[in-house]
Image (cartoon, rainbow, N blue to C red; front, side):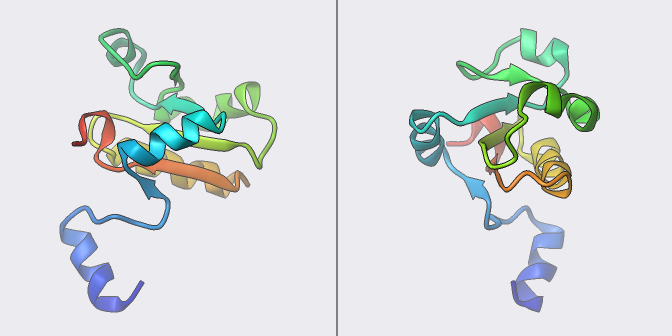
Length: 110
């Protein structure tokens, strides 16, 4: 990413390489990805995407290996706006997960 784009992204949320849209999400679901809602358990109870599992961002480091052992498995993380899930994506990458995607702008993205 060039310097100007990095600076713009500091002020406005920009699409990054592992960000996906709803259409791409549908394709990844067909391929058998794991869909993780990183919002709180209460937010998850209030509504979530079909087939999602809830692992709040603040628990992801501790809980992910209980759900996904294969670090090559495709994982999609999401939240309401894409902010918490972007942080969760980075945590998973730091833990060695290779195929982690963030639902750009979250579950309400159009």
